[in-house]
Image 1 (cartoon, rainbow, N blue to C red):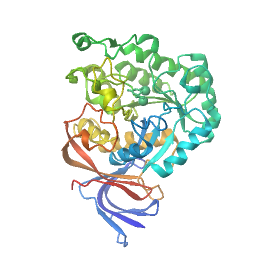
Image 2: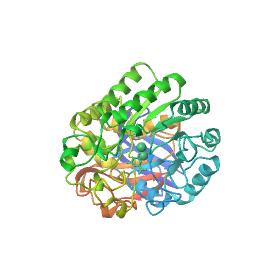
Image 3: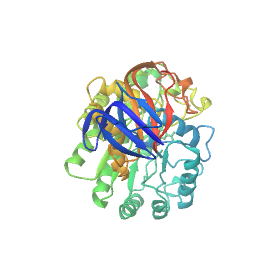
Image 4: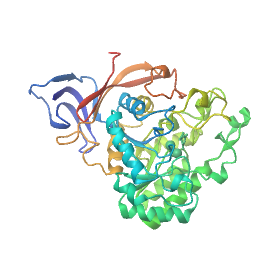
Length: 428
Ligand code: DOR
Ligand code: ZN
Ligand code: ZN
């Protein structure tokens, strides 16, 4: 099978090449990138006016499978990813049961090959059952293809145990993906601690809840030498701490989620569960710092923290609802609208933060680039397409988004995984 993608605005974040090119895909690979390709093909895609980027690699997704399939499955999460231009996802291990053994990782990988349209990399938990007491089989899970381990949903509060995990991860050549939250400081908070929380009569989560663990984790990475990736950074001091860590040459990377660079607590229009996520929406100075951090490459990655929940679990006040919102199907549009169309990021930086840097963090050498010999995981993205986000059209089982009804610019037109079209936007 040969697919020819013509006249697209190609962005290759590896070589930093940008321009109008044709791309020939044969089998699973990109076989040619040139100004004009005359080869015959089974399928021709006209990508005029669209960016052709490496498929997005989302380092932070909750697939809920096994055990919480009423929220999402490998199939529905994969469909949602394909629709959002995401071709590889890292699945967080806080499922039921928690993914904490080699066998459980292998099972998800085997099932995902059959059930998901996109590549799934299962991450392993750091402690058994994420209970924070005993280390999981990190060596076995690394063997089964975990490119990172994570206790996401919480932090490993026992720093001594965590340091042991870091040493093992370092030996195995895998990264730690850190959820930074000092649970002893949360004290029942459900949203950012500010005037808005007071007005709504809700308990707040201060910035320090995140910042103290970011600082601790950076210091532990310094001591152990492990590659540390900081998940869903939401505060201005997180950006400061990452900046300082990078200046010191520490192996630290950081991600920001679209909701954290798009919304502040000022956008919370009602006390509803769809505005509740962990970490919470923050203040204006935080959002500005996150955007500046992204622009200056202090913050490396854009990831979703896609956290689907049922209608029943979210259609409640913030006090009662579960933490988390979906993100796979809105990530690209929100990034383009909020960061690229406004000039904060260049289109090339968008490709870097959504694909190239994530590929580097995972050590995927054949992904995150658009050049000959790479795997044909591609997204064809139309930057001029405007539409209104409608949660009822989501492929995800989760409809829990605060962005329903938002007008955005830029939409995914096609997604290819291993050279096969896995999503085509039918609104054209
Ligand atoms: O909002 C969140 N939801 N944050 C997390 O850390 C966990 C996640 C979930 O699993 O629902
Ligand atoms: Zn988390
Ligand atoms: Zn998460």
